[in-house]
Image (cartoon, rainbow, N blue to C red; front, side, top):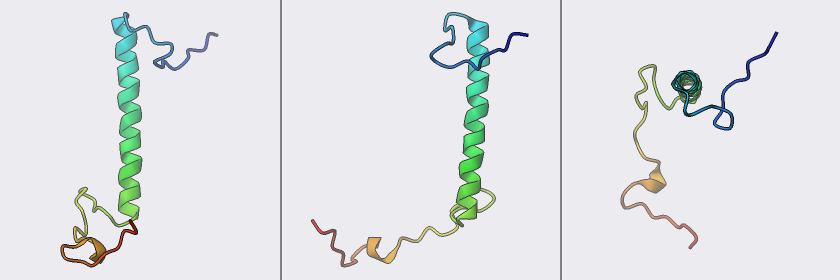
Length: 73
């Protein structure tokens, strides 16, 4: 049985429409998985709610207008 390797930019035939379609579908699926992981991480940190909206959009005190801050520069 021949094992098919996962297409990558290093081995995909960009001149073959079928192979490129398969590659694009694979990359879209992988990107979707990464987005879901990042979203779950942001939710677990309390940064966004289940709709992806920011839970708190207030700036930290040192970033607010008129705050006295020293960047050490």
